[in-house]
Length: 215
Image: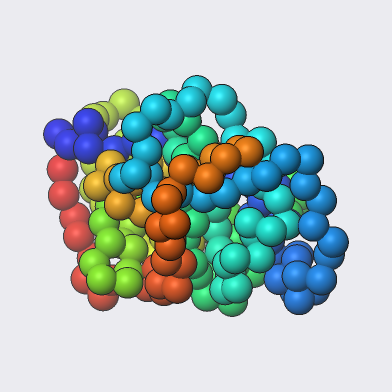
């Protein structure tokens, strides 16, 4: 792909995604356990971004997301994460994939996809969260043959693309434009937003109808 510079690598925040899933099922009744104050600020308001890793995200932050949510950590300077709101079945499929990866004998649809892709002589090269149009994120799964640079890609729901990446051990990338507009900066101990309110109520996990093939 010629637009590699337009994307940043990301990783699934496993413990936060699972914890949010469990807390939401319990109605967020668990007591908040904070060792320091933590707030969130849109990335566009940040100037000096620290190089520290994201520390454990508290209950108070997670409960802000009342819908099923996948949390991605953006690989760049600073504590940046991207919450992707998904459907109930989508988060359950993802949690199931995470559990099944530890059990080599188990089968799920994403392991089937991995086996099918390999049987055809391909491998999953990467997945990308490519853009947001209004309230919907779009993702693509990139396939290629091990010894070749050419790839083909298919559109996917972000939740399915992330599950495929986990099952196939493929990297996840997020558009820099999405990071700039939607990523959240974790700020520990101080509030730097001057009262700015962050919006969370967008539905961001729908599949695009068309299938795209490219090199």
